Image 1 (tube, helix red, strand yellow):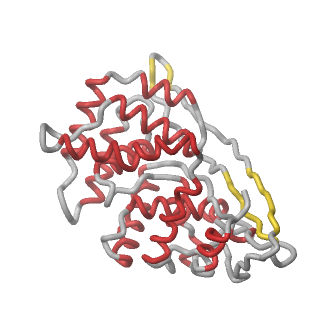
Image 2 (image 1 turned 135 degrees about the horizontal axis):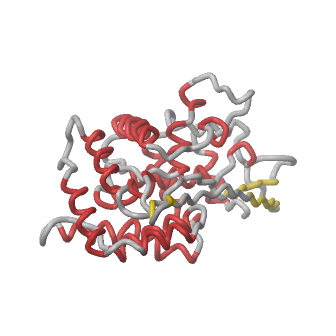
Length: 296
């Protein structure tokens, strides 16, 4: 996928190391404006459901009964999650095997445990709620966080690969890595285990980042920013002769076990597939990309 002049303009304006520690609210706004250009056509409707329709429906229910998620919405969220990352049809069948009433009651109970507004124990409440939601078949910590992020889209982050690697990259914190000199999102954070402990660390860092940027910066916008950065191989944007701009699109690897026990044995559904596509385009009017641009 060639880099457009609009995309290159955005990239050159980012901090030289793409670190979350240096990112400004202005960078976030620009990344969010670029986000739609990275969404394939077949994901547009699901993306709209995940960020707009489903959160709005949950909020509307709070004025009628108590907020909850419907089974059809949970299925739609899983479809979005699988298309957004690695497709594993087994997870979708597990989600579809949940009883509609169970989905409604479990999510209603989980949402009711979260405090309204700022609270000193908010992160702990999120983690406790996470545990409640993983009782549903096919729902692990990452999918549970996706459900919660639809309930409180401004404050609760979805445990996505891109957000975790961006926020948790030890290179950005100046930590010494045991990766034999290899750096970057994939090597810096190592294999993501999608555990409660990892999500707790993510919650803390996201909260700290929002304190720095201001609470008007929603976590959904941080998620979109990380998604954009995760698909821009910063260290490979400029290679070779001047004017040859290379843009890498990487299908993020997710190694989350979301299978639930059905019958006598537990079903684990994992995927280790990864593919990378690279193309180069040269224009008569070269797009200049700063050579200072590096990945964390």
